[in-house]
Amino acid sequence: MDLRVPSGWFFTIVGLILVGYGLFEPGLQAPLTNANVNLYSGIGMLVFGVFLLLLAWRASRSHA
Amino acid sequence: MKLAPVDYIILALYFAFVLGIGWRLRKRIASSGDFLMSGRSVPVWITSLAFIAANLGAVELIGMAASGAKYGIMTAHFYWLGAIPAMLFMGIFMMPFYYGSKARSVPEYLKLRFDEKTRAFNAFSFAIMTIFSSGISMYALGLLLELVLGWNFTMSVLASAAIVLAYTFLGGLTSAIYNEVLQFFLIVLGFAPLAIMSVAKAGGWHGIMARLPANYTHAWQYMGSPTQNPMGVEIFGMVFGLGFVLSFGYWCTNFLVVQRAMAAESMSAARRTPLIGTIPKMFLPFVVILPGIAAITLTKMPGMHYVLPQNAAGGPDYTQALTTLMAQFYPAGILGLGMTGLMASFMSGMAGNVTAFNTVFTYDIYQSYIRPGADDHHYLTVGRWTTVVGVLLSILAAYVATRYNNIMDLLQLVFGVVNAPLFATFLLGMFWKRTSAHGAFTGLTLGTGAAVTMLATTVAEGKGGWITNLYQFPSQMAQNFWIAIIAFTTCLVITVAVSLVTEPRSDKDMEGLVYGLTHIPHDATEKWYQRPAPLTAMVVVLLVILNIWFR
Image (cartoon, rainbow over all chains, first blue to last red; front, side):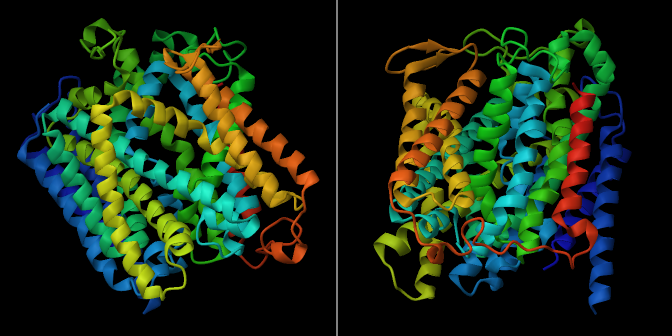
């Protein structure tokens, strides 16, 4: 098992959930911040997740 | 703080992935070596991250933020002065002996190099320590979840223990290691937004420097005397006590971390495991310590209305720095991710303890003293069931902690210094072939005895000194560092003295175990960035820059 695959999927899914939540509930804020934390962190997670999946895909292609 | 449905979805998703990884890895287990040592086949980037994740338990995560709030940037010395030099030393100088000796555990190395009694001493003390450590961490987590989320203590302790049990029972050490990497990513990504936002809110690093006393934002300048800095230590205690004895003792001899490197696929990969691990480790303070420093800054900014809750003694409860910051900065969604990160840190810490306990119990206690000479399948079964027993004992320890708080305090003090004399034993054992078995055992027991005696006779911040109070340390940190120094020196001197008057082992028996009788690989065939020397040089340059930056 290539660990990058499950880790990649986990962060892709969490990223999508957070981005979606950030888009549909942009006004959701904690006491000390007025940034759309969910949207920005979600984008970060999504990028990281997709990056891991790409690495795993490249590795599996070169092995095949 | 209350979690929304989306937070529970993220938490559930994480549990599903963790269990799924364990399920997928179950087929890899055919022998006790697969279960307890990952069959020595794990890729190096995974062992490197697991190496640092196994140490990043919930107690450490909460504790580092708390220390950041209490002591400021000097807390980073646990990383920049302590862990990283020790990890480099481990990779360059010690790993060839660990991996090359074919020992399956740290106690087994002691058996090969010295004799049965030193192994027994280390195996039993280590087994007890892992059980209580994971119990204490379980207790800390249960308490925190009860306090912050109102979750039932018993429920959260049992549920998290059950999940750790499930995935380690299925996939053994490999499953624990793979999950530790996922947990590491989660901890970093889950808490990085908190670090960024809390520091930004506190006015950036310059704002923090302007609002806090200078000795909170300088790691080196105020170490002339214990009275100058919030940690209450002076430069010698810090550099020798923490930087040398305690950190080297922990990172070079604690089987919990050493086991991760031993699972690597080759000698070269095993040596690179701690070396590569230093790179993310170096930057962890920005994620785990900075929020604490930002928290204490925010309490000094009236417009923020941010305060740390009080503890029983009426002072600020620094251990709540991390969770109160989450409540202030994380809305539903990312809050779920942050809580998941906290759970993940707890699980990686606990799985680390349980897998190390497993191996030491199965190989060093069961196979050595209870039933030697059985077939491997028998030991695989024993290993699996030891996982169950280990988890049950940890739960028991967590309940002991709820009943007898003081005992746990005391145990944590003892665990803090117990590896210090052991490092002297390893240093002499690996690099001085004259070191004899009797010398090692006498030195180690008396060194450990010295540590416990000193804890029993000195007091710091109202703790320790349960026999008498001969000396008062300015702070617990100072007490910890100085006891480590004395215990290490005691072990070193006595081991040398006894070795000189007892019979050394013959060279033939020590091949592959000691410097001068072991082939040290040169790795000249590897790519330049895979060789230990260039990798180390790069890490040292980065480390010096960080230390100068935050001097």
